[in-house]
Image 1 (tube, rainbow, N blue to C red):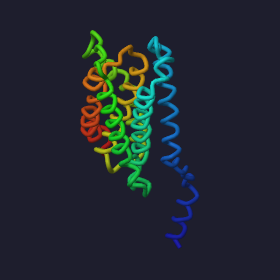
Image 2 (cartoon, rainbow, N blue to C red):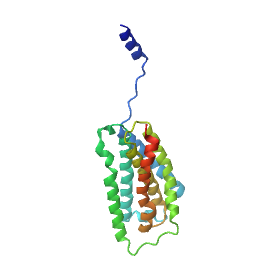
Image 3 (tube, helix red, strand yellow):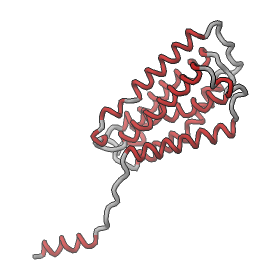
Length: 210
C-alpha cells in the first residue's frame, strides 16, 4: 500500500511533459530564420548592381538554386541529427551529400563556360573572412538549438551545422559581390565550405557532446 500511495503521490506532482516539435517543424523554423537573416544581410550590404540582369543567366540561377539546396538539405539534416534516434529517418541525414555533388556539377559547368575567364576582383582573402563572419550568427543559432535536444551524432551534427551556416554566408555574398570570376568563387567562396564542414566536426564534439 505504501508503494501504491507513493506512486499516486508522484503521479499527482508530476507536470505534463510538452511533446517536442518534429524535426520537420524545426527545419521549417530554421529555414525561415535563415531566409530572414539573408534578407537582412542584403538590405545592409545591398545587391550587386547587375543583379536583376544576372537573374536572366541560367547558370547564375542554377548556381544560386544549387547553393540554396545545400543550405536546405544541411538544415534538414541538422534537424534530424538533433534527435538521438534521428527520428527514424537516418537516410535524410545524408541529403547534403547529393546536394553538394549537384552544386559541384553546376560549378564545373560554369568553369567550362567561363571563356574567356572573367577578371577576378582585386580582393581575395577578404571574401573568406566576410563569409566566415556572416556565418557566425546562423552557426551559433543552429548549434544552440541542436544542443536543446540529445544528439548522439554530434560529429555529423556539428559538420552539417557548420556547412549550413557557411553556405548561408556564401549565398548572401554571392548576391552582394560584383564578380563573376569562377576561379575566385571556387577558391575563396566555395572550396572553404569543405573546410568549414571539417571544422564543424570538432565544434560538434566540443559543443554537442553530453
